[in-house]
Image (cartoon, rainbow, N blue to C red):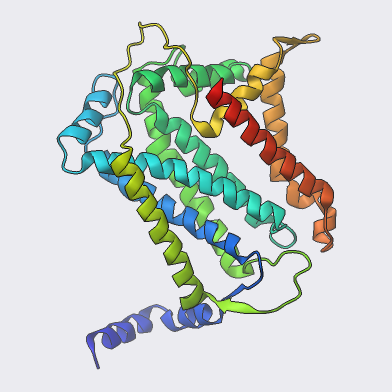
Length: 353
């Protein structure tokens, strides 16, 4: 008996490996004209893994204080071997991660993959999307450069207009009245401890639900044709991972993530401060609201609108009765199309304005 066979036999006596092997042999992926959209879930998981690995490597040298954060990132980029590459991969993969999550979320939405009995799969996936946005927001300030400082200042100011709890949220995020070293330390704690713990829990539940329930077929697809998950679909997934890795390498090598200048809280804010692209549509929506709508504050109404839309999006599986009856639901499809158009147009306006 070879070393691999003996190792497998030893493990099989202690862990039910055979039952897992049987499970993966039986697991299949539905084959239809929309099957290509399934790969984006695996791509998101791959990019999340890259975020974890590169984040741990950066943590070896990063120092979370207003006095040392910028210098430590500069040291990583100039003195640590391949440090600039690791930081660029971390930054670019964060942006690609959110982009892929957008695509994955809307593909599931249009294929009605949230319908019974997969309501909780949708809910946990959407919670992961919100956490990814939280990663983007909390990680933006960590280099302690000028753009990040003032963008965080603007971003946290928006929470102050939330009715009833706005002042509390502002102080909670900043660790005080203004953006200071306490804000950096607090957001660092969220970025490397709180959000990773939450994402590990929710991602585990999400993946478990997918394994138990399998992948959904779009409404109207009657064929039972399937592709074995292992190894066929896994190979297809791995081709996507290699393509994503190649894209990351090109972006990181030819467009390395800039560090900018160290933040100076006493300096005036640079002109044209904007959030990251995945927050631009919300930023532009806030600008569309007048300062007053009747007796109500315009910004407060806009923030409340975001909250209502977020709750609606979370509850879509329970609201779309037609999809749960295996019927097409054109109203919800139209809502999704309108959402994509609004996000794209507002994001473009944010870049060119």
